[in-house]
Length: 408
Image 1 (cartoon, rainbow, N blue to C red):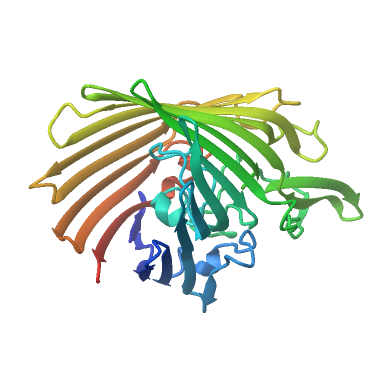
Image 2 (image 1 turned 180 degrees about the vertical axis):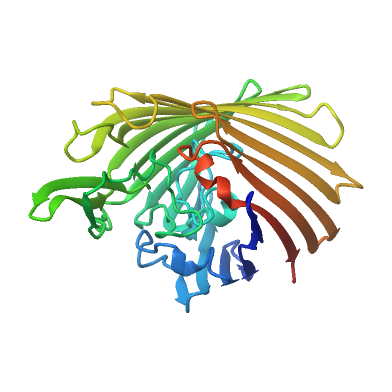
C-alpha cells in the first residue's frame, strides 16, 4: 500500500491477513461457526499500536502481539433451528442497512475507523457477543437482538494516519489553554447497559419493507469539557463518556424493470453534538437527529450497475448552535462493470459532501484467476477543504495492491 500527495510518494504499509474459518454441522441441524483473524503490518502507518483499544469490551479486545500484529476472534456463534424460532448465539455481525459508502441503519455493530471508511464494512465492523432470535409474527419476519457486550467505535490514536483533524470532529483548544484527557467513563453493567434491537420485515405488494428499533449507547464517545482557571492559565479537562439513544427507523426497496428504488430512515431520540461557541459550558449540546438515504439503481446494460444515493442528516430541536450544519448532505455515485465472464470487475465509488465540497473517489480493478485466487489494484483519492470529513485526509491518497487466496 502506497500513500501519495503533491510532494512525495511513500509506502504506507505492507499487510498480511489470515482468516481461518471452521464450520461444524451436527446431526440435529445445529451449526457452529468460528472465524479468526491474524493481521501483521510492517511499517507503522496503520499498525495496531496506533489504534486506541479502550473502546473494546474485555471480551472482544484483540490480542496485540508486539507493535505490528494482532490476533482476533472475529466470530464464534452457534445456530439452533427449531419449529418456530431460529437462534444465533455468540459473537457475530448483524447487518440491517445496505447503503453504499456510508451507513444509516447499519449501526448494530460498532466499527473500526483505523482506515477511516476505506476498509470493507465486513472487515471494519466489530462483531459482538449477542443473542439473535428470529421468528414469524403473522405476516412479518421478526428479529430480536440482545447485546450485553459494551464495545464501541474504535478510533485511531493520536498522530495516526487517519486520526481525525477536522474541527467538526476534533476542535482545537484556543492558544494558551492546557488540556488533559481523562479515562473514558464507559458503561459496564451487563444487564442494564445492554443494547436491545427489534426488526420486523416483510414483502408487501412487490415492496421489501422493514421496521427497525434499537436502544443502544451511541458508539461515538462524547468529549465533555470541564473548564477551569488555574495559576498557569485556562485549563480544560476532557471527560469522555457515552450516552443512550432510541433509534426508530425502517427501509424499503422495489424493482421496476431495470430500476431499483430503495431507501433507509433512522430517527434518534437523543443525540449529542459539539457546541458552537462557549454558551454550553461542557462543549456539548443535545438534540435529535433524522438521517436517511434515498438510492436509485439502474442495471439496463449487461453486466453493469449504476447507482446514485442522497444521504442527509438533519439535527432537530437542538438546544444551541452546533459546529456541524443543521442539515448535512452527501451524494454518492457507484458504477460497477464486469468483463470476461465476470472474472474482471471494474468499480467506481464517488462520495461528495455538498456542504463543504470535499469528497472521496475510489477506483478498483479486480481479476479472479480461479475461484480461490484473485488480485486487485485500487486507488483512494481525497479532495477538498481540511475542515471536511473527507478533505481532512487530502494528504492520505493511496494506491493499494492485493492478493487474496482461499484454501479448503
